[in-house]
Structure formats: C-alpha cells, structure tokens
Length: 85
Image (cartoon, rainbow, N blue to C red):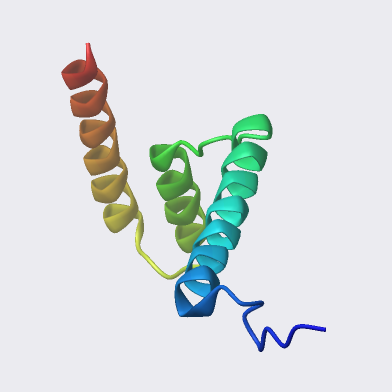
C-alpha cells in the first residue's frame, strides 16, 4: 500500500492545519464551559474589607490604621458606584 509518512500525505501544511484545528476546538470547549458555568465575580471592596478586618483582628495594624484604610475603601466604593451611574 501507500507510504504516506508521518503526516498522512498532507505534508507540513496539513499538519499545521490539524494543529490549528485542535487548538481552535480546545478554545471553543473552554469558551462554552465558561459561558455555561460562569463564576460569580467577587466584590473587590468586600474582599479588601475582609482582608483589612482580618489584619486588624490579628493585630497586624492599629485601630487608627484600620479606620484610615476603611474610610479609604468607603471612598473608593462610593466613587465607583457614583461613577458607574
């Protein structure tokens, strides 16, 4: 029978096209899974506030530093909320 070699007789161009097709197929599957099962976005302020509270509870920052940072976070959240309206 025929001896088509490593790439099945299509040469390097066929191999490249097969590789591109496989990459596109994988990207399509990843996109479909992410579209069907979206991950909830975390509230950045809530996350930062939780870190701040944890650091204050652990004694890493003083009460004054905690209040200053909390006011800063409140200001950032207000600016984002007011700017998005």
